[in-house]
Amino acid sequence: MTQWFCEGLALDTISIDDRAVQYGDGLFETVAIRGGEPRLWRYHVERLQTGCARLGLATPAEAALEDALSSAVAGSRIDAECCVAKILVSAGQAPRGYRRDLDGKVTILIGLSESARLPEAVYKDGVIVRLCNTRLATQPQLAGIKTLNRLEQVMARREWHDEAVFEGLMLDTDDRLICGTMSNVFLIDGQSLVTPAITRCGVSGVMRRHVLTLLAEAGIDGEVRDVAIDEMWSCDGVLITNSQFGALPVKRCGDKSWQTGDMTHRIMQLLADSGIGEQPA
Image 1: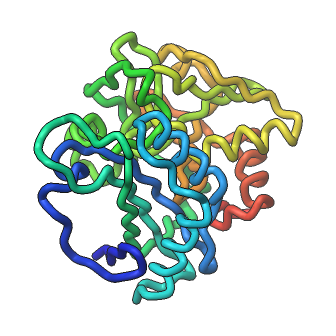
Image 2: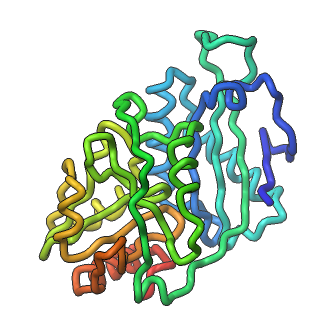
Image 3: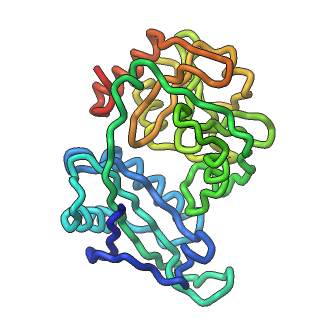
């Protein structure tokens, strides 16, 4: 179970009048805590602050977010050596109606949950994914950020119950590959990589950003652009990324299979060298 905190105090209820409950009015970040410290913290803060600006919410200062997280970690029974922190920023309690007060004040909630590492074999052998029938709707104002409304992902995740399938990949309404229900996607083409642009819909993950930064530093071509789904069937390999597990090779999607090649190993080594401990060196 998740332990929740607000202003350093444990809580197990939230007002039914909170706009997070009524309208999904707010944002969240899912942060990997490793060795008691939040991983890729700067990227999480920047995405959360960008989201607040987009939604017209008061932007929490980084220091306030750090204090809220530190207080929650200190007061929790969850082992902070390896756990998950969910930072939830709500527009707070308000009278009924879509209109929000102009002051844009927010409530910051912190939830801590246990985290189980994936078997090392999946990093070596890869995972099975599927294409989802549920499409992502175009809405540039919300593209990239993590709003509290995740109904598209919920509907997509309902499409399969096969435990062998690790993730579902999602397209937009124009048959462009966008991301997974909980991950971002990289296609390997020879010695270069491409990841779908997150400008119309989808979430711009912090691990995706980290991988793009590592590629640039290593002199590897990493392109961000629109990607037609047909490109995936002809590429040399596929990786999915997520703030919790790092990067995983994909071994199969439908009838198409890929082998884990040298470029995949190189990317995973770059992640391991950068401190992403899930990646086997």
